[in-house]
Length: 205
Ligand SMILES: [Zn+2]
Image (tube, rainbow, N blue to C red):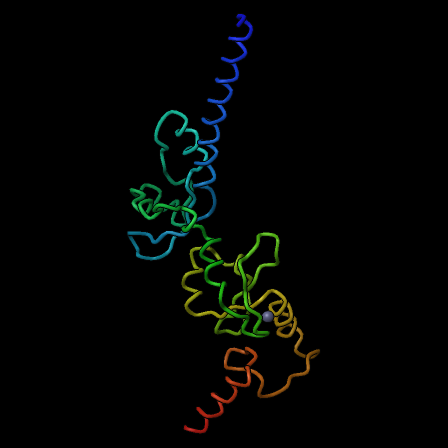
């Protein structure tokens, strides 16, 4: 082999090593990117945080990735906390993503109005909404992320189409004809089964 061949092979090996090195850094970047929900160890309530994913990826080039937060819904007041919440990242930080938690909540549930089941959420789809005890619907992405876990306890799932229709109905009641007996206490549409149940409850009181 000539000197040029050796040089060529050395260049190839170096390029391959650099590609592996950068791929690992990219993997770290993707692993920690996105808004996440943690339980704040100080308050026991949800906090919306972001891990400094770029810093983690950069530090992974020279050793173990250094993990710290770049944003928290409790900042700036608690900016100097010990960031003990980071222990909640676990084996798969993607489980902490707001997106994952929202998607998990909707999946398997059905729209309270049209009863259409929700499948996995996609970023390009219209966002589904939540129906509150005040009978107002709101897209989940319009709610501060750290409030979502609380709302999941008190609100009902609504698909985007019904959210639009119900918003119109609420804002322009004069243009909508109501059929009485079709709605439950939160304004949701009732199935025949639920109507029977409510009728029997009323019958017993
Ligand atoms: Zn619906």
